Amino acid sequence: MFIGGNSPYKNAMGQIVKTDDGSKAENHINHNLVGEDPLLLNVVLKRKYLDGEVSEETVHETIWALEDFWAKYETWQLVDMDEDKLVFETMVDDISPLLKINGFFGLTQDGTLSIFNGNPDQADIIQSFFQIDIKKLEGKKHLQLKQGIPVKTKEIYTEVLETMKQYSLEKQKEKKPN
Image (cartoon, rainbow, N blue to C red; front, side, top):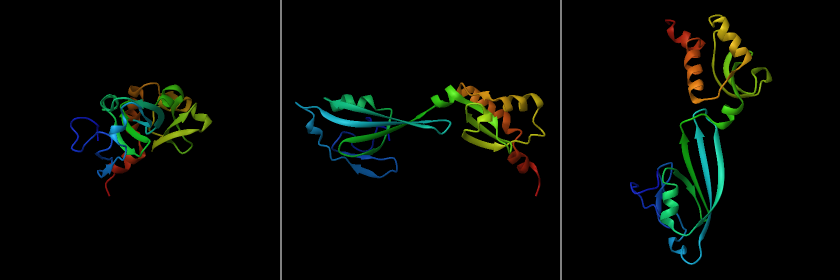
């Protein structure tokens, strides 16, 4: 659920909100506490990336006005809360910083297209996709995968996956009649 004016449930602290699983959760923080003394909360921000990585950041919020607080996180989905902590989540339409810095497409020993943390010969696999028919893979592409193709952008990530799907053993099994 996005916290904002469009919510079917009340969205101010001390009121009922809808959680990620669709259930209602009552937040027991009294919204009237914000006045002379600020409300102190830990806010956990979870970012989910296209490649499946999840980053988590904890920020300590000093809240003087609840309206400002909710406005700050209106594009985030509230997934959990208790008296002194709120957990928000968001989907990021990009690959994770880890992949941008040190991710390389390559092949495992059995020919599975994978992303490695560093060069493929280091065998530190971050994510695996599907098995490639090495015999049908062009020599140039096979060499590139052996050396490692850097995953610097979302576009490269998507392009390599789309290009390699045509060499997937799973795709070839689907084409064969029973």
